[in-house]
Image (tube, rainbow, N blue to C red; front, side, top):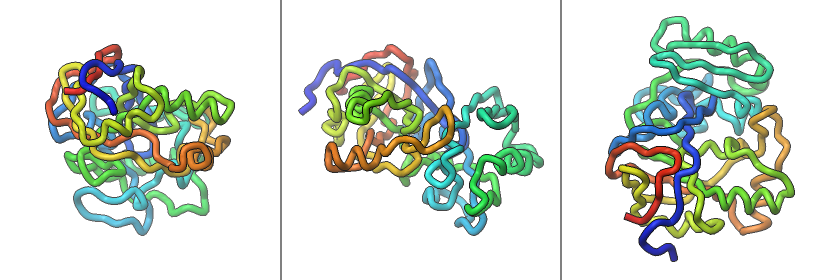
Length: 252
């Protein structure tokens, strides 16, 4: 059982401006209560036949790495209202999702790297203020570098943390100790987050973020080694504030 006091530090911060399409590293970020990270899953690409309308929708309605592993190799950079995307097999593109032609430009850019037998993109949709993560609440994901090292060791290769599309990576915990944090409140920098539940994983984690090809049996290895396919935990920001790489993490 994790006890009160310092348990480690914040080692990495990531956000994903368009759900399933592009990861961006950050040095610091300002968190707001009952909101996801700013510009994390702020937009999503609805697939043809996906559920329209307002509010949160399940990941099954959108383009994502589990369906198109090459999407896992997309990197992102937010500059004001512009989102810049890059991929090893595509030229860089810059879009402002608010612009009328942004969706068409994005879909044309995605077409060569998304499977032709999958449902094509139909609309670029804005997420609700609570975000469009895979959880039906305003979540921020917390992941454990020690768990990544344990999984990497069992697989005999170093796994890129981008496979797991987490927001806040902690170092200093024991492997899988993040699951002991469920139901507890965690202080990182100026912010406080309540840990809600473990994150069940999908085939997106099998794809290499450098190449976009599936090359690691992450789900099978988790099941064989630890009897589950969970990695990381969902949390909700309960007290806003600035968090930065290097900040101490501890139980509030």
